[in-house]
Length: 326
Image (cartoon, rainbow, N blue to C red; front, top):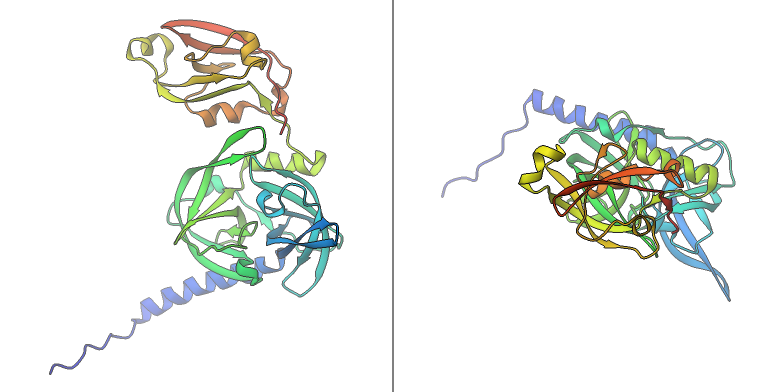
């Protein structure tokens, strides 16, 4: 009988690389863990307050603001308890939630929180090291590590009255489990680049990116307790511009109007199903996300020019976006 093969011990270079990886993950964990809280969400019933769920949150400011996922606190949830890595427990109240970005802002009663540093997810690269810290299955302060598996994913989100696509979602293979939602996804410099939001399968986690768009959401929640968005009143999807119209329009992709909401801004302005929306105020709209990105609060009640291809003919329609009511 031949003797079983014995694996050779790692070389000095391999051991050094492994140690460097470990050191990077440990440094992120040591720096960021004090900023991540485990949440116990409470709801009020006739018998008093009862547990309604659990999750994680990230401290944004020393004076008590925390960021989590909107689905963690849910509609109608007003308060709960946040437990930090040092064992400190603080009551919190929900300041505001935005289901269309799956973000919510909380305010803890205590002060002197260890605020996390926010990064910019636009700087991430596929293959880059990321570290997730959260509260999976109620196990506070859990740390997992992996890489950015993909960038630019889209995740559907809904409120009671509207649907939207969360764009540029981060895909990672860092292990996420129920309870990880609302926790931090950080780069190797311990900067929070995402808020963990979903487990899509084994080795497949998704995080809402921290970027200019989500920074605006956070600012709106902090100042007003809600996010104001403009609204056209259409449903549509991407499609190619007909080849014969590409030279005239200067576009190869557009949004086809599938449905127009009765009484909405688009309907009042005369936009019809099967119209092809090419641009809004001169900005091309090749995808639904492009149109969503333009629907900021500043456009509410402000006349905009929508360039439309209708039955092969170019027209311009002026309309005033209304405020989206969630």
